[in-house]
Amino acid sequence: MRNVSDVVTPTEAFNALAAGATGIKLFPVSMLGLDGYKALNSVLPKGTLCYPVGGIEPTEASMRPYIEIGAAGFGLGSRLVQTQYDRATNSN
Image (tube, rainbow, N blue to C red; front, side, top):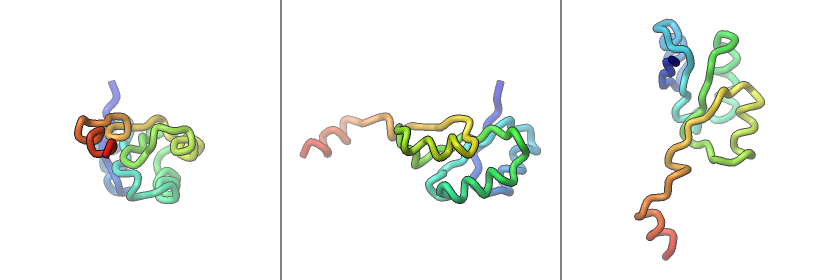
């Protein structure tokens, strides 16, 4: 079983790993951007599982840059679900 903790700062990431997390969920990655993710990833222990979440589109163009620098996967939520309210709003 994996234990993945939510983090956005290097301090949070190191604390989560020290507490036994097997990976980190970078949320919201939109706050860090690709350059921030690269910087954080560069100081993490080799092999740390990183999952960017929050601001990732379910497209190759959105995901590929993160995969190329080591993302183990992604969290996609609101980008995949369109609520009844969203459909009504978008149809007007």
